[in-house]
Amino acid sequence: MLGRGLRLLTTLSRHPGGLGVSAAARAAELPVSSAHRLLARLAEEGFVVHDPSARSYALGLRALELAHGFHRTSAGFNHLLGPMRRLAERTGLVAIAGILDGDQVLIVRSVQGSQHLQLRSDEGTRNPWHATSLGKVRVAARPEAEQERLLAGPLPRIAPHTLTDPAELRAELARVRTLGWAEAEEENERGVRSIAACVPAADPDGGPPQLALSLGATVVLTGREELHDMVPLLETAAREAAAYGR
Image (cartoon, rainbow, N blue to C red; front, top):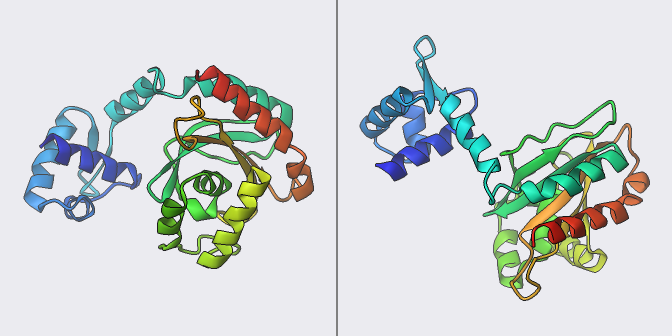
């Protein structure tokens, strides 16, 4: 029952507008009767809220408490904040940290910059790996077998310039490995470009890096070459984050 309840909470986290019982049950792959009982219990505990007029359920305030509690733990990526804040101050851009979770990038930390037009990259947001600089730099560091599994798709087109051809993405990953950093040009969102670098693993023999840092910018305010010039600052922040995490 605990596992089923957690699946429902995860499902609702991906549907901020809320879901009815039947839709939540389908998304969580649960019987409708089970989903109904679990949602009612979760509502009693404050983890979800019920909107009678819309006949839907959405995450409640107790879920927010859990999220804030996670960030206060040793596993909450707090060691990233110092380097990310300095990076955002030096560049004026939003600094973003993410991990690869399956075939998606999960944003775990975000620090706003000072540029008057700022991107929103909310913590907990997921994006397809192949459409983001964070995803490409992380996948480029993974073993070849895992890269090929991810290249086998699906690779949906998210924005006008999303790379969806496995051969093109394979060449892009090779380029990322050569450069040591990745970029995305309006591949996940129109009008947005970004660069990303891996946070070196704390243990050099402990396998591929698990974290990456990114800078996000609007194409109208930050040119591509201007963003490329910020790569050294990004790489410095990544090394600082690795040192803080040891």
